[in-house]
Image 1 (cartoon, rainbow, N blue to C red):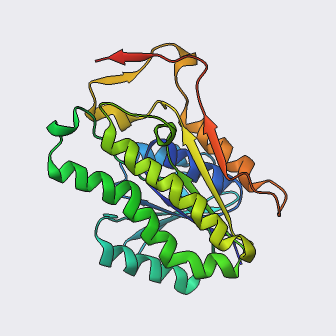
Image 2: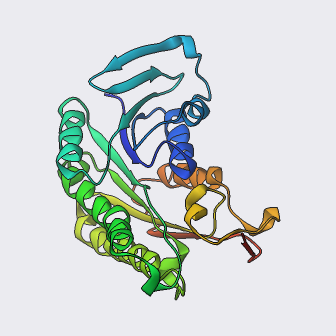
Length: 255
């Protein structure tokens, strides 16, 4: 049976590039996103003729790839009953051996100026959803000796003025990963945390700053995706539990 992966936040940025790499590696990828703009979806089709689209089934668009297959699933990850339903459907016909918890949201500023709704969305998206998905899939991952890859952030290791809540959620995710690995390593499950520094995505759309303009001052989504490839190509029995990626230069540009 084809290798099956679930990737959250797959419609853009890091998640889109991870999905592209996994399809290239022969995975059947179920990519979750709130919406899939045609532009973002086209960029995943690295080896795909649009004429080969094979339609829509149960609300999921499917397309054949040269080495793998991509399913795009439009789903609000904060709608837990719907998320559970989608996972149940996937598990019914697939052996899920890879979970990539990539979806994330960022709100920045002085903590007292964040409203309650933003704080709750940060906690639920960045921490609750990965824990829920891992819970739903862990029996399968144990059965197939699978892998969990959590996309955290370098902020998990640092103090984060003007990003207290965001950094706290990522620190929580990294902590969850470390403890989970100790819990499941005896079953052959790998748990890996990737902690990127500033990456050229739209994560900072809600901030008053952005990555620097010099190429050496930011990471590219493709570089995180290639790190995922490297992790999956390691010899079974070897686990790098945490990887931190940083650009050579530290530059922050005010908008």
